[in-house]
Image 1 (cartoon, rainbow, N blue to C red):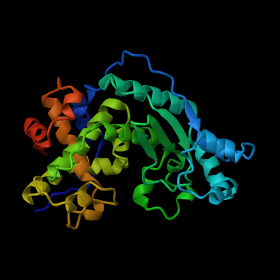
Image 2 (image 1 turned 60 degrees about the horizontal axis):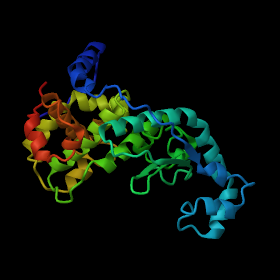
Image 3 (image 1 turned 120 degrees about the vertical axis):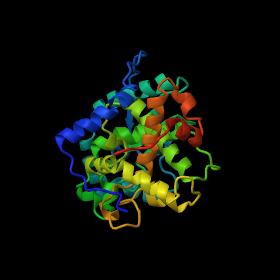
Image 4 (image 1 turned 180 degrees about the horizontal axis):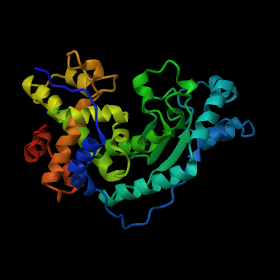
Length: 326
């Protein structure tokens, strides 16, 4: 049975898709009453690469930044022309004033839904692309948010040679805010190691994406998923086919851990083991979990996010009555 179709979306079809999802998405476009606190951003690498700043003074100010790097190597990195060049290029791509405003709005929205949230201290730095797989680290216990700006220099950057193309697609400046929102959402949504079914993994991802809807409602959906617009359109056009494949192959409630690698982990495409694999969008398990959660809120819009994230995947799925149709 052929499940999937080639994506050729006309303006009319796109309008129809947008109109159908409009009501569910609009529940998150609410005014946040509390004024956004101004976010101060500390650029660690600016001081690190400043030869006028004594290394001992720098280490005393940021004792955790050196990590396990040997003193000699740490000092040499300050003089490395390639690392300096990468930092300067990365810094030229990021408007820190705009980032401060964006983070202020993001933090205010997070606090609106989760009042116990405290604004973290924000630090930017350059790892010279060493942390491209996880360029944003949020530590709620310590109250830190670290953003590696070398992970957002633009997918065509000369500094990204040798990095897989499927990572590069989300290494643009416009990916910085959604990746930050995602890091915060991942820290908020509880994850149970006892959740063994594929449905559990999909809905966990769907919860994270739902928080993204609430935290950054004006950001395009494909950026929330770290996908391209074309990849997201493929998932939309093939939503029914994807679901039919999962159902007909008894994958929804399967405990097979390999399904995470096939349909949720980062990669060039999803692995249906069909001739359409290389045409497919990656991470369709995340997309499906997201649509299940969106369908849940279409049915139960009064549900508080704080309650929703603690619901079981099975309860969310059953109450959503998710069954996409062409």
